[in-house]
Image (cartoon, one colour):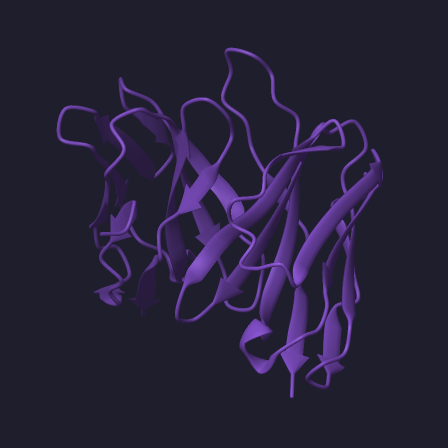
Length: 116
Length: 110
């Protein structure tokens, strides 16, 4: 069974350009999470969805960041315009929450973004 | 103050040693607790959930102390393959907002 799929794996872009990161969650999972990881700030939750609906976007750093989940098998994280401080590894994770039980988030391999 | 705090280490231990990591959290309403493991330049993976009664998985033991708001991870008989960063994870009540600690780096040497 395929895990969480992210694309691209590496992205190098110039400041001011639009960047779109893509994620395909594990089939059947109803929660999708977007994280950003940097040396300085560690792993931070940006936004998460339940059944394609954004539930909490309080971690989105500013209006330049937006995320969508048009269907259960696809999500995007867009940065427009990008800035050098956006350079980080962006992870997507998915999970199936079962009431009353503990759960696991399955992470994709990440997208390493470099903004020059 | 960070919501979840861990000693960043690094912890350098010989093979066979026992090592313990602690993690504190500030939100008393936190509902779920986990330890994840992250290898260099890889994605985090669940190591184990942490239950109030404590739980064990082979060489790994996790404990939760709600009164003092800390969780711990004990690794016995360390292996070279245990070298990684261990992330403490807390989920707050009322949703699934997930907060990761900064991680504790472990190096196990021969």
